[in-house]
Each structure stands twice: as structure tokens, then as C-alpha cells.
Image (cartoon, rainbow over all chains, first blue to last red; front, side, top):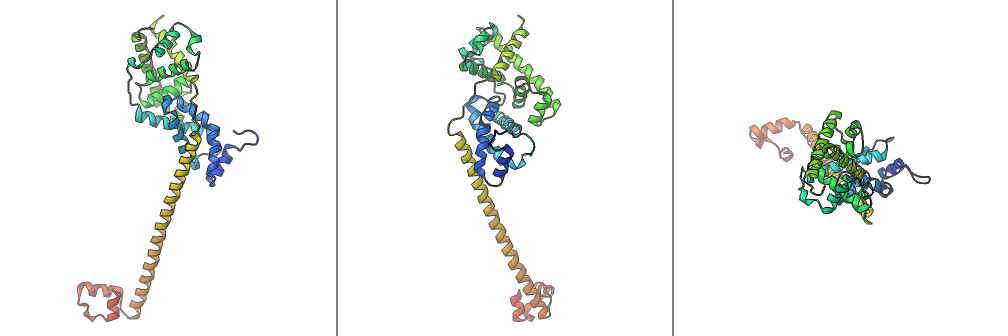
Length: 199
Length: 107
């Protein structure tokens, strides 16, 4: 990482560890968007800022444990995944959200998917946000581990092995959770298609 | 269309939505808040280290004083020809009046 003239990540880390705390701000500015993108993939939008804040604090605290020669970005995404996992464990314990909480916009979005109106599905930020909210609604009935695995494997397209590395779990456990979480998601989507009314 | 196909279609669209999710913008004070949190943590850590160093200083001073007193008492006991064990056994089991004034002071 680092353009011409900009210090490399490892140089910055060395400076921070030698006492130049303010140098951490360069890493913060460099990876802020990335961390926000990663975190927003796991948790609802309203929790993203708070968790991203904690991710950077945690990264600073654990900087001495960063293994030289590995990618700082990957290390940071691991911290982000763990923070999101903790957040989900604390706040979203299989809290099934009733279908009545879905707005007309959510149902219309699903309706457009079924009607093959590809243009309408992702026409703007609002439609995309509705789609993500619908996804969070569908995942709300999953446990934190299942939710993390579903996001990593089915939504982000990571291999089971890669997801296991991120989560620090065994490959077998991730494989089982991936299968179970997908089945639950499909069951939830089935309920939406059955009872959604408009669809 | 079969139910499973409809679910797959919706699932695929949701996956696409996830991959193209709108970017969450950090507010203008985000970096400042993080850096303030880091500085707070650093200050707290320094305070802890200072407190730990102060406790350690007290422990070492106490140890040094105790060692000096022990050396002094042992030297004195050897000088007057009585072992510290003897002093202790007389105090615990016998009449301490045989002890001389300086020996009593040792106790």
C-alpha cells in the first residue's frame, strides 16, 4: 500500500510503536472507507460508525501484535469481522423481526425482483438501501455465527477455508453453519414470498 | 415459476444488493473522535504505568530498609554473643529479664 511519497503501512506502524501516536491518523484516513465497507456488510447501517470507531481503537491497541510482512488491510478486516461478531452477539440474538415491520418500499423492491425489473432494483441509493434492509430483515432470525458465515460465504463469496480463517473457526464448523444459515435464509425468503401479499 | 426458483432469484438479487450496498459515509468528526479515543487510552496507560512504577519504588525502598535493619541486628547479635534464635526462644518460652537492655531493644 502507499502511493509514491506516502509512507508504507509498516513504516507508519513502526513510527506509532516508537511513540508517534499521531502517525496512526494516516492509517485511519487510508483505511476508513474500507473499514466502513467491511463493517456495513455485517451490521445494520446505524451501528457502522460506532463499530468502525472500535475497530480502529482495537487496531491501535493491538498494533504491537501485527505480524510484519502480512497485509495490514487483511489484518484490519479480521479485527472488523470480530468486532461485528461481538456486536451481533450482544444485540441481535435471533431477534426475529415480524413481517409487518417491512415497509411498502421493501415489498415493492422484492416485487420488482420477481417481475424482472432489473433496472428498478438498483436504480438508486434508496432502492439499494431498501434491498440491504430487506436482507438484514431476512438474516435477523439467524444466530450471530450463522449470520457472519452467511455474509462471508454466500454474500461476499469467500471460500469456506477463507471464512474459517477470518472467524478463527474450523473449516467443518463453517461448512455446517454455511449450509444451515442458507437454509434458514431461504426459509425466511419463502415466508416473505408466501405472506408478503403483493409479491 | 417454482417456489425454489423464485427464492433463488430473490436470494441472488439480495446478494447483488449486498455487493452494491450504498457506502456509509463517516461524519466529519469521525477521525477526530478515534484519535481522541486513542490519546485517552494512551494517557490512561501512562497513568497506570506511573502508578505501577511508584508502587514498585515503595516495595524496593521497604525491602532495602528491611535488609539494612536485618543486617544491623544480626551483626549486633553476633557482637554481643547471642544468636537471634536464642533471643526468640527466651522471649517465647522463658523469663526475658536476663536480657540486657540493648538486647531488649533488639526485640
